[in-house]
Length: 130
Image (tube, rainbow, N blue to C red; front, side, top):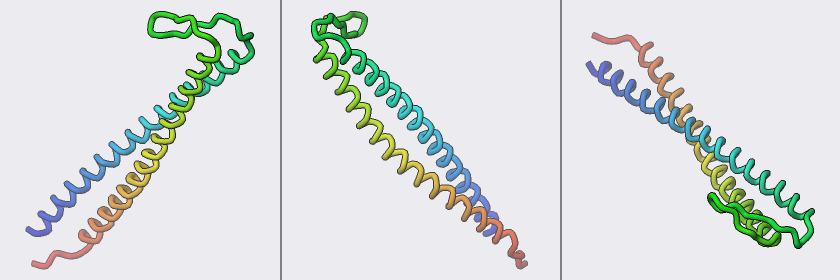
């Protein structure tokens, strides 16, 4: 009777750990996707800044704001691009930090799962005394 109760508790803990591992894996994948998107945004801003730096200072440039474009001077557009790049880099650092935490959490969950399986195998190998 006690062995059945242990089996039920073990199965519940096992499914809980599996679910936690799946959620953590999904969060890690989401963080990777967000980091890739931010890196692309940085690269786009760098390319735009490089092209703007080659233009003469009196060139008309337009900044996209929603559905409209505003006539903006080149130095101001370049400042906006620099700010975007810095913001993206800060977000990447934050995401990488949370990803590191999630990786550690996933590793701990895997270790706990292994321990549970090992414990289950040890319990199964012990003969029942009647």
